Amino acid sequence: MRFRNLVASAAIVAALAGCTNETLDTTTSVDLKSVKNKTEYQVSGPMVKKMTELGMQKQAPISLRIFKEEGTLEVWKANTANRFQLLKTYKICAWSGKLGPKVKEGDRQAPEGFYPLFPHQMNPNSNYYLAINTGYPNTYDKANGRQGTHLMIHGACSSSGCYSMTDEQMIEIFALARDSFKGGQESVQLQAFPFRMTAENMARHRNNPNIDFWKMLKVGYDQFEITKRPPEVNVCEKKYVFNQQASGPFNPSGQCPAMSTPPALQVAMAGFEKTYQTDYDKAMKKYDGMVWYEPSEAERKAIVAKQRVGRELAYAPTGNSFDAGKLMKASDLEKKLADQKEAEETKQAVEIQKKELEKATDGGKHVPVPAANPVPQPVMQAAVEQPAKKSFWSLFSKSEPEAEAPAPAVQTPEQQAAVAPQAQEPAKTTKQARTTAPAATEQQTAAVATAPAPEAVAETPVLTEEPPKKRPFWKIWGN
Image (cartoon, rainbow, N blue to C red; front, top):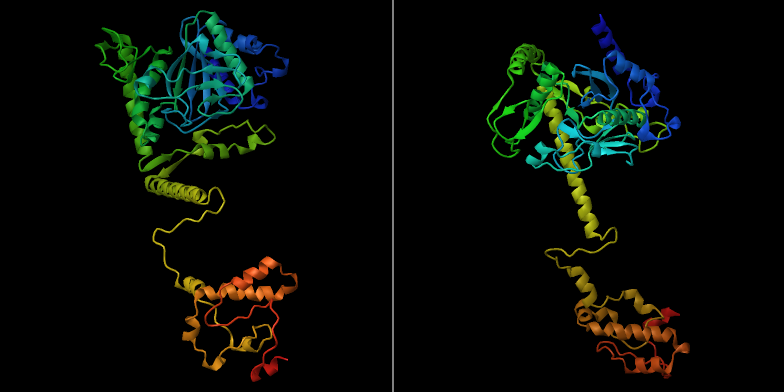
């Protein structure tokens, strides 16, 4: 009866846990305005009462378990028999990336694996209210060349590779860890999993590229489920090993020493594995022809977008993968992933073209780019090299030079083309000088007088007065 009551209490706590203070259990929620010193905050009376009911001391050791897919962080605490029981479940407010381990700096992935948290990793002066450094990269990560820094469990509900809680949640988690260190616990074990490693979940994610890594983590997961104690973790041959009795030291990158599992644990694991395999076979039949679509971070954010309304921009909750993802037929998922890949490639191509265009135009300023093989422009060259042809009717205009010229009827295009190109500039100079004769200077006069005259047209200097010449008979219509 008591066991059923404890299970029911744990279920109620899990249901009431939430991402904002308004949705937390009102008996244990924190009023930050009343907190004078966040690092000395004492857990609430209802929390202490629950510890007593579960046979736990206030400063007894704790362990943290994270399940990305459902977005939860659990605090487990040792009872007087040194077996850990679930004390409280918190809803993670934000975690970035997708299911799978962190591999390199900047990939936005939150760590997965087993991480020891030491007192020096507690940060009371965090820019995100309070923080506990996960210690990433751990021994396993380093042996496999994984990189990253400043991966935390912290407040502020904003994540870029971290597990972010609300400030109200974080002050309580921080206090529970602080009390366990005061009680003599050397390190708090953080177990970060993509999901609860049940037979059904493992079958559902069987096609994920991280499945081999997850199978390795599952050994430690199963041993905690059996013993209800954090497993002893070591690394050799670049792999995790759990609760192994070894003949020598463990070398993370070197060969594993001779190892053996304690007999009692080995027997318990054998029975557990038999039940698991039966459940896995059932799950495989259930998911035959079906695969799980793992949502992106943007798709997770979309399902909780309303939670951001009226809050600061830094507040960025992310929904869980379980709600945002879905089961699909294998053929449908294959097509969906192909469409996503094509869309991403198109987007990248557009970005490349945009950058090339910006580079060619010097950031928006037009800079002509010479062609690799310039094409000759005969029309433009003709316009420069040959004088413009005169219209027949321009011969009857008063503004034309009054010098005698051959009759237009006998002037052929070949004759016009024979005129030297340099004849154009003196003609223009003479024409401009005539229109500005009253204001001409002595220098202008000298320039016009000394300008070379074209061979085909005899120009008379306009600044020298000469008696009018007899006009040709066809000029009479110019009056």
